[in-house]
Amino acid sequence: MTEPAKVNMEKIVSLCQRRGFIFPSSEIYGGLSSCWDYGPLGVELKRNIKEAWWRTVIQERDDMVGLDASILMHPKVWEASGHLEQFTDPLVECKSCHLRWRTDELKDNHCPSCGGELTEPRLFNLMFKTFMGPVEEEANVVYLRPETAQGMFVNFQNVLNTTRKRLPFGIAQIGKAFRNEITTGNFIFRSREFEQMEIEFFVKPGTDEEWFNYWLEERYNWYIKLGIKKENLKLREHTKGELAHYALKCYDIDYLFPMGWAELEGVANRGDFDLRQHASHSGKSLSYLDEETKQHIVPYVIEPSAGVDRSTLAVLCDAYAEEADKEEIRVLLHLHPTLAPIKVAVLPLSKKEALVTLAKEIHADLRSCWMVQYDDTQSIGRRYRRQDETGTPFCVTVDFQSLEDKQATIRERDSMNQIRVPISELKNTLQAKLEGEDLFILPPGGQVWKEEKRSV
Ligand code: GAP
Image (cartoon, rainbow, N blue to C red; front, side, top):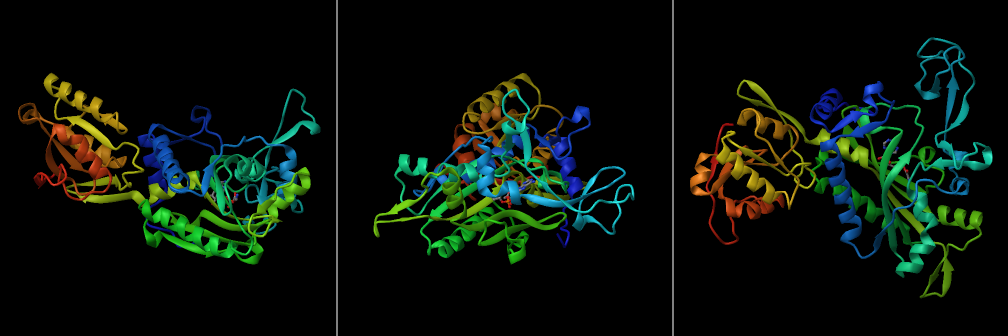
């Protein structure tokens, strides 16, 4: 992690807590280290990221299907996958305070916390262990999955049999993963409970390099399409020493987080490691009959593996901006409309009954299409600022004139431009704007609504 970016993490954390994106887990009890709760806006943002991913990698493709596998899996899964043996960090323990440290975190041979003497390094498995059933004994040990990937490998044959997909095809899933991380911190960047969005794409051996390049480009472009700035993304190839035990090749898509460049997503060529391992440990065939050659082959796997929480953090950092605005600073999130937690806020200019009634009618009508907020507290300027800070792309303002001319004002977050639109055209106009249309020309081929710049 090098080259700190301009947005600092304190500002992101503070905004997230102040506006209800993300809270420390169990905060009233002092929090639980490296666990986070997504609040009313955070849950919407995260849901929108997951939906955008699902739409791109499953809904809009012929060669992908979805899955939702159980978090608890047969313990043999982790034997076969190599996680029991290999998913470890070498740690030293302080003989006085018993804190454990990774050797690469040490300046010298003393405990960074109390200065005590340290033990020799020992391997420490990162999987969370628990017991299934009422008896806490070794025979009942199960693990919380450290990656969602294995659910897709063990279901390879089920999916093949039930969907009749032919190679190349992929399985994708979104779900929780758990790692007893030793080095945590940097907010939701590295936590002990997190969500992954993973694809296992099965291909014929020999075509793996081509598919690897394809997926690397697809995944990189997905972030760009969602508005992440190109200059904040880069690709980095893993050195031989860095490669995970299953990987033939891996690239990280790195993002320039406030603490420096760090992994957002990994794209790996896992070869036939996983299917072969599970076939040999389960005794079940996980091969594929190639109809052209009539040969049974074990497919290779290309795995783009993204973190939901890291994507959320990258999206927030990338969108965060502060602008000089008269005497004040306007804080805003330039969120892509697809990702914005609230798409539209409906704001009556005052609390006069007639305005409130009309604004509530508009709110009721629009909320059938999107997440829409109604707000009639405080001055209109303050309400605009609140929506800017949470990334709401459009505000609809209802004023006294609206009662007469049946028009309302749409105010855009980024430009602060305002236009007046017939209330009957609000839905269409907002729909077009949310889909990225620049001009206020609606209905298609129809009238051009007048655009005027206002100061609030
Ligand atoms: N199946 C392959 C795999 O799990 P990984 O690089 O260990 O690969 C993939 O994890 C992605 O999961 C990472 O790029 C990151 O976005 C996310 N991730 C991994 N560990 C995480 C953690 N402790 N907290 C948050 N996200 C994490």
